[in-house]
Length: 169
Image (tube, rainbow, N blue to C red):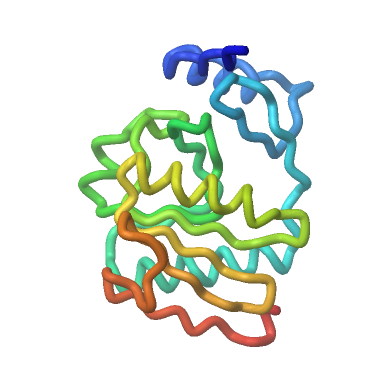
């Protein structure tokens, strides 16, 4: 038995933009590498507060620009990290791209109760294979994990320090 081939990048981008422009489409979705729709529940206020705090911390520590919920083309489809960060010049290079055609330097996933370890492991790998220098995973109780191309790290290789307020969890 042969697995179905993944959809070409151009087809994923076309499908993404078609769905995003359709008023009948769900508000929060991703596409897997086969172009299949993956629906997500709307993020909670608490989830958004954590993502905003992480974005602010990244911008204040690294400069550049941190943005929440940006669609990103990966080898596992079009995914939407909770926060992404890039240098300002790199954002300029991506002007007009939806989804971004290259994975940002830093991608952050803020876990929700519905996330599985397998799903997050898949996303971390997809972001790193796509060129992310670091992926950060924020756990349900505020735990912070850093990942690089070499695997899980004890600390950020970029010097990022995330001391998230306990009241966010």
